[in-house]
Length: 211
Image 1 (cartoon, one colour):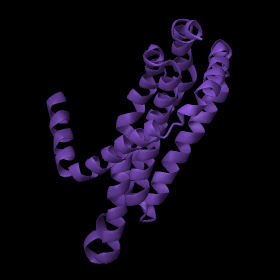
Image 2 (tube, rainbow, N blue to C red; image 1 turned 180 degrees about the horizontal axis):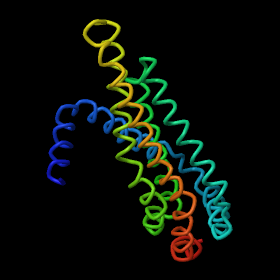
Image 3 (cartoon, rainbow, N blue to C red; image 1 turned 90 degrees about the horizontal axis):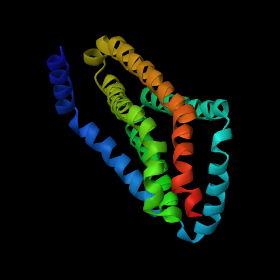
Image 4 (cartoon, helix red, strand yellow; image 1 turned 180 degrees about the vertical axis):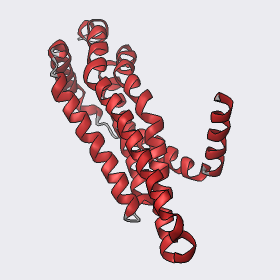
């Protein structure tokens, strides 16, 4: 069973490697732009802000964090879905990947600028658990958004050849969106309840001790 799944995954990536290359390149580019876009002259202000934030980690409003994370993930899924069915997915999907990469790159740059390598591993505790969950679904969702967008274009250009399979293609795309939404829900729960706990455990070592 596992070998069959790995074979199917390998075949899928081989057939769609261009889409994956575009999405991953956009994600990496977003990380680079976010990392180099931070203004280091604001380091002192960021130090004070981060210090206050992490002092209150133990009293974080988990429900508010969950609501905000869910809202952003829902917006992301809706943008990718609507852009795909409106023939804009080929542009929106790479931009969505770049945006998520930008957020990671900028966050890494901010904390590295303020605390150096001492805080780097604490930040990994806050980012990696959630990112490990949403990264692959995000890439797949962006790829299928681009594929569906191109499929719509082909439907318009070659009506008799492509329209017969449109319903099945749409159902498959909708199911992928629902599955990704479920995974994003898990990542939101991690953002709201697990990541603050991990950062709170590391705060005394990596932050408060270095102020």
